[in-house]
Length: 65
Figure 1 (cartoon, rainbow, N blue to C red):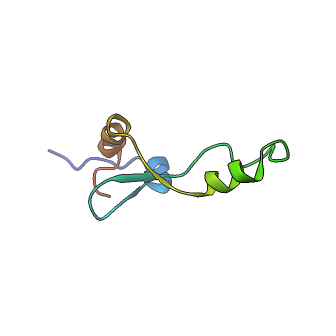
Figure 2: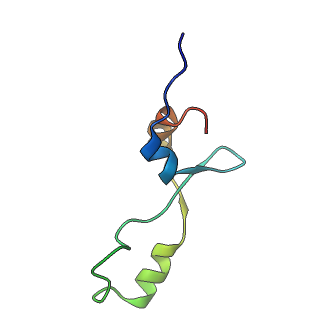
């Protein structure tokens, strides 16, 4: 079997924790920020662990991460 190719876009967006969970950052933080509350923008800064079904999909496209 040849090596699998890593999806480079996904590799830049997701990080794998030491326990093997996949971490992601929030969307909706780049523009049109004036109408969003300070609390909402502050919470969008934090990274979160992906849900299991989504993490399974992402782990297939970043096999060596």
